[in-house]
Image (cartoon, rainbow, N blue to C red):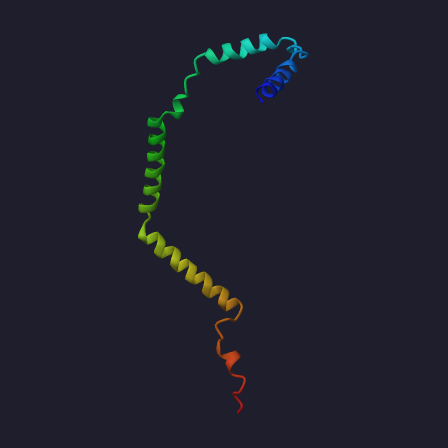
Length: 111
């Protein structure tokens, strides 16, 4: 049994005798060396605009502007806009005769 295993192993090992080395493509080692040297270069410094201090400052400015816009509304301006909206609605209702609500319900007036 041991001889059968040895014979099988010898066949497997001898099967590699006919193999030849595969040639590398042209300039393979030159390109490989260039890629390896490129990896050794220090990384470029990040832009100053991406630093956390500037990002946080920009966000705070945006939030501050939003807060000023929201809380700086005049109550008088909202009352005026509400009265304008009411006047506009009334003029549209008068134009389309929507103020005459009784006309639709007076169908049985004769009875």
